[in-house]
Amino acid sequence: MCTAIVGYDPRAPIPVFLAGVRDEMLDRAWVPPARHWPDRPGLVGGRDELAGGTWLAADPSTPRVACVLNGEGPPAPEARRRSRGELPLLLAEGGRLDGDLGRYDPFHLIGAEPGGVRLWSWNGERLTARTLEPGVHIVVNSGLAEPGTCGGDDRLSARVAHFRPLFEAAARDRASWRRLLDGDGLDPADARALIVRRELDGGRVWGTTSISLTTLGVDAMTGYDFTAAPGDPAAWRPIPLA
Image (cartoon, rainbow, N blue to C red; front, side, top):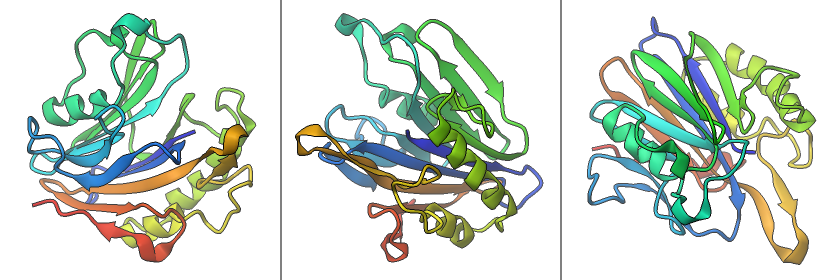
């Protein structure tokens, strides 16, 4: 149930706000955003230690940001499957999506630059692409979300219905977005919650492990804020971009 929230206004001094809320098994190893890939020294992102990829990658020099979410549909054949964590790296570096997508399980991939935001969705059989219009957009595992139409998942519908108007009304500054990304005071068990936590069989825990907030100015990346303790306002820290 990862969530990406995009605020796009081409007329604004900071055209793009892109937040990535990562939900994962809490015991899955990862490290916070930095320049983790020697073969891609220009990219910054958190690194998944299991597969080596990332959920969100940024190229501050372009500037460009890419964020991936799991999609819905048949998985890729086991013998040729590649990690979806490669996709943000490929898109952030090259600005386009190509190659054999049949190697990847279903996904939604957001690519943002100051001049526009695109969303690619792969369902295991067919790729669709669309350019996002100015405004606030929320992407969940069922795709680009509208209140009440999130793939039949009432929890995601409730989340979208609660948070979309809050982000639409928020000031276009990082502090205002961080306050909303801290969860708006909702309990993790609330159907509307952005920050979640579930106790699973066997003692494992699944929940929101981190949140990233990136902003793109007209010709430069203006911020990359990150928290590894979602819901704690004091845990946000800026990621160095130089």
